[in-house]
Length: 498
Ligand code: ZN
Image (tube, rainbow, N blue to C red):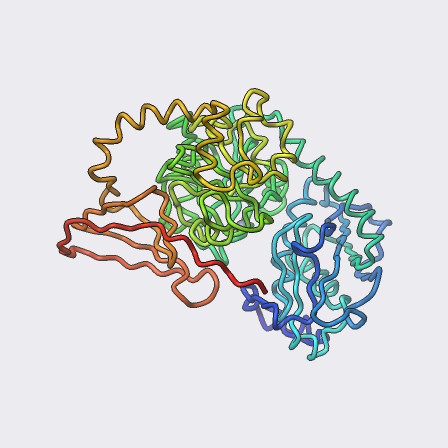
């Protein structure tokens, strides 16, 4: 932060700055929790208004304030940020809204996760003790950061924060309609219909090599920014985190590879990622994932199908891993074959893993997600996709898929015939990256033999350090003599309940 800006928050009792962005407030440290998995109705909204509809810099609290909330408890939360200005248009609402997450996290001891109807916040005891005892401070900080970051766009801004459950319920329903209206706008449009895609690098503060490619048929993986939203943002601030991508030449229309996407991803990831396959999960050039994906798609080699798990799914998924375990190996801006972060809205896209067979390749998803997107699942496959209710484990999944004759079943027969040849060694080609975790969720079934000759890179995730710390060990010209290195998947130890 510049000297000029440092005085900007002198009346706020805690620090405000970039350094607090990755800060986590653990359960034991929290004064209160707002939203999150225990609360059904919560929301954040940015709304474009006329100049005369806004009282500039006004903050309103509807419901009990922080000092009225019991320590250690969880409460509902909602926030509406209303903006006006000559350049403010409806299309900008979504991208402005996405910044609530970032700006809130600048506040010392205030944690904000996720977006839209899924927000989860915590205030630390220490910040509360320093005097952060009213939500008005939150509103004030947001107003100043919005005005400074969007000085050319936002001329007037007011913030309303809700803690009253009745008001939240009413607004939550309106908010859900607004999100739906935004998302449905892009439905029906095809990637082939446009010359421009858009990019988003908002999450590079914690996933430095992540570049989100937003196309008409691929909403950002956080689910908050679609093609129209990114277009509007890139128009008002072309040098900002949302920018246009000239599609360029289509190298592979099945896998979804474009010269323009490759070039800009290479530039924005500082040379780290130079090829991207948009329409597949089974490529070493998978789309990268930051950390705010609404769901994870994961390949299940035992059944040659794809599973989907959303952030709110409790417990182990069909492969024995939890969302959080898989999130560790999926996120951080890497390309991980067999794992990719996605938005729920993406399940409605005709390009959903279209190179792999689309819905015909999807075998498992949580029942509440299945209910949500039911009408978008092709009718002939709808009943053939398992959920945690009828297939909690791989064995049960196998039996289920067989009983309903899921399209992946015919791939098994072919695979079984080839198995003998393949059994000898499922090799990871030299130089290909594998992801190592304490519990090692390797995407291959039983054992993986790695020929340890030449160069082998192991990007290690979560080897201590802060959240999202990245380590990369490179063996150059190493000569390690081993007949075989076997990596086996170990079932992660069950976490104790808090
Ligand atoms: Zn992100």
